[in-house]
Figure 1 (cartoon, rainbow, N blue to C red):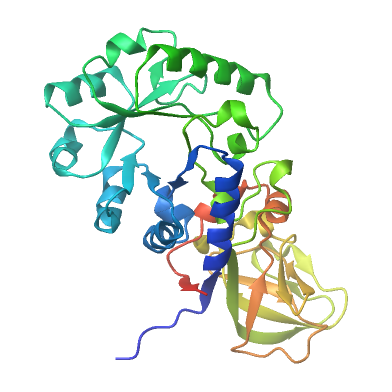
Figure 2: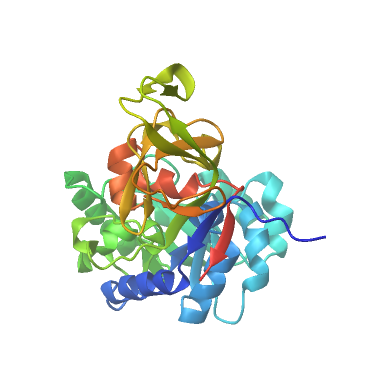
Length: 348
């Protein structure tokens, strides 16, 4: 049977992905540059992302849970590591103890669980002000992890993508913990943290967003290349007469006669209602505005200026991450990780 071809796809630029990692590697100075591939590689497909980055020279990868780790562990080769950022629950222990993947121990209970089981090398997360996961920096972290073989001691920056006094506070807190807690390596900087310079780099950086085309801070502008281009197929071309409305709740009414195209795209695919009346399709540089409400599976765009477009044709969806975030009210992270399973993912 012929393989199904979806009416929407993501055009994924492998060369741009690698170029982004190489720029981040350069900005990391003497620190190794890893890669966060959680959330299925931020929606792109973690297996294909990891395969390309391993080939480019990346050696340190991070996922959120052990289900994600199981998918990627077959890609591990000599010198390549994989770490689970959410640590190890009781339910994970059998897999974790048999795995080549390391847990990032985040709580005193996780530390005790790993120690009592005789677990091997591990990573440890210290909370320095984000107040999510991690051992409290104010406690005796050295005593808590005594006897463990700590591969990487890490923390996570809460506000490095904006000008915030908390970022410097976290830097200083982590430096104090580093001085007291022995580990083979130390890691603090995410994508935005890499842009902040030497005081944040330590031994290992852990970019995520910028790998996939997101711009975390102004310093990265002009250096980070777009990786993801959503494309949708025209299901129908139709004509609106002056006075006709379109879509749910009739939020758009035509002031003139003109053509519209109905695209196979909607909020079930991560193209959320924030794009209603704000988003656009792109054909040969021309913007075709979204008309009315985005619905679950469909969106309408104005094609009055493009009489050549017909049923079955493909259009690009305007998806510059910074511009799309401003238009939709979504973060760049949401724009990437919300891209659904109904897209064909086509690497070029």
